[in-house]
Image 1 (cartoon, one colour):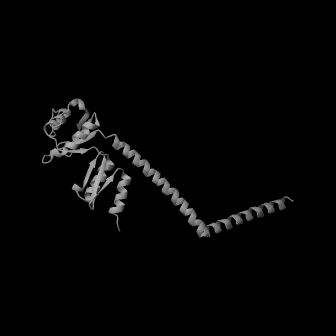
Image 2 (cartoon, helix red, strand yellow):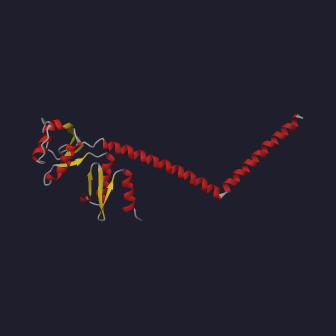
Image 3 (cartoon, helix red, strand yellow):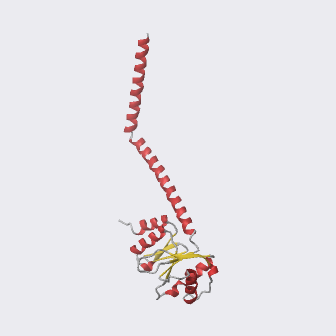
Length: 207
């Protein structure tokens, strides 16, 4: 009696396994089902990748926003006993015709630079309006060795360099942290790294 129960149990398990194998075989040979499954997986991964890109854009945009009051100044001679804030005030007064004081400067210091060159200066102004006045007046420095640029994130600096390589130095400029590039007579605005990737795909990755 016990043997019969064992045989029936064994046959039942074998039948279940055979049934499962048949179902699996049908599923694996059902092209329509497999295509639907692959499409579902692809859509899920694409949605995840898109969310990651959006999150990366938000973080990078926030980092750039935190630099809104900053500027970088290049080509300014330095001396051992200098006070950088006084150097900035003098540049603004003598070369930009702007009347600012050290009280308008939140903080400033020299950055690392290439050996044999004057180290660039980064300055954070107390008010964005002052920063904007200084940046707008940068064209008065044409013909001198001093250059004023926006304080961009590493990602945006890479974008600027890439666009200059693909177009020319004169076709790329920045304003309020946004990057602008002139392509075939049209000016494209880049507000995020995703914008940059879209522009590259549209204008430069043409087969």
